[in-house]
Amino acid sequence: MTTKVTGPVSIHSLIGKGYNRFWHDRSFYRVVKGSRGSKKSKTAALNFISRIMKYPWANLLVVRRYSNTNKQSTFTDLKWAANKLGVAHLFKFNESMPEITYTPTGQKILFRGLDDPLKITSITVDIGILSWLWVEEAYQLESEDAFSTLVESIRGSHDDPEFFKQVTITFNPWSERHWLKAAFFDPETRRANTFATTTTFRCNEWLDEVDVQRYMDLYETNPRRARIVCDGEWGVAEGLVFNNFEVRHFEPVEVIRKVRETTHGQDYGFTNDPTTQVSSAVDLENKELWIYDEHYEYGMLTDDIFNMVREKGLLKASITGDNAEPRMIEELRRKGLRRIHGAIKKPGSIKHGIQFLKGFKIYIHPSCENAIEEFNTYVYQRDKEGKWLNEPEDANNHIIDALRYSMERYHLGTRQDAHDKARAIKSLGL
Image (cartoon, rainbow, N blue to C red; front, side, top):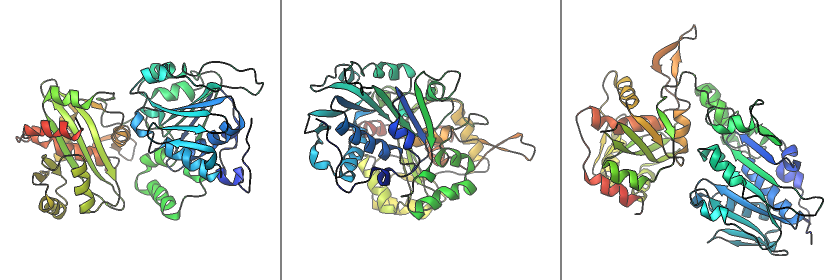
């Protein structure tokens, strides 16, 4: 049985402009890289709900790098889409699994994470074929091999002449060195049977004026970041301050237990700049730095920052904050962050801190997406002739600044309390 969307709902009015070919495309690989606010995830969700109802043989597997991120992203988007289409009453939403069932036929939308690959390879469905795969925030997939193994879960065939299998990939770009570029966007190496496109916030007619203005301001205040955030283009490697980093999955608790050092830093902003916090494990003997947690948010008040730190279990941890905000640090201390202190800023401290960080091999956990973006867009300045200077641009560095502050203790003669190791492990819920 095929059930169609009925009533006054207009698909065209829901999806708006910019996604007509995406909506109808049946290529095996359907790939969208887009800017922030380009409605790619919402459009994909609407498309899948509509298609599940149209094709009774279809089942969908939704995958993110980490399974616990599905519930607040893809699951919520698909539930939103069913409500927008006026068909939520036809679906059963099991939030605990999570899982979505189209009740007229029993078709399934399943959710998994690459952090548990055995649960992906063993997936089966009772009705129809596991015919579609949606990989959301695909930039978090570190290797093409892991992706290729994932694609093998889409298997089987059907005698319906309308039958097709498809892998949909959505993501914000962050580095031209990522395997996604060669696999789907470079003509010489692109996989066969691929439709790939780039969308921007300009095709999202439902963004409010505040969001649009924030994007437009980036062209003036931070053009390199605007290339990624506003235009959906790749971050470029030329002139990068750091070339000693790698995005790699690791178990934070295991690294912390091994290296016995953790460090935490904060940078403060409000309207135009975010407030950030970054946590790392430091292996001084082997000169390795493991970035395992971050926070990145605009408009945070003192209470918000305190609550964020409390939720991370770091109220008693040593935290180094930007000393340009002494009142903020004092307010946080009075609220209960007894061991927060200001960074020691001296002439040349930025260059010195950067040089110190360059002496480490830096590993960034895939969940730290803002750290990944900054390390891929933090560059040196150029002179009028286009030559690179030994002075970083003051942009794309809010996580990096917090990281510099947190590392002062190791090259300015102070050290972190050994108890922070235990506190860091506790903050991870282990």
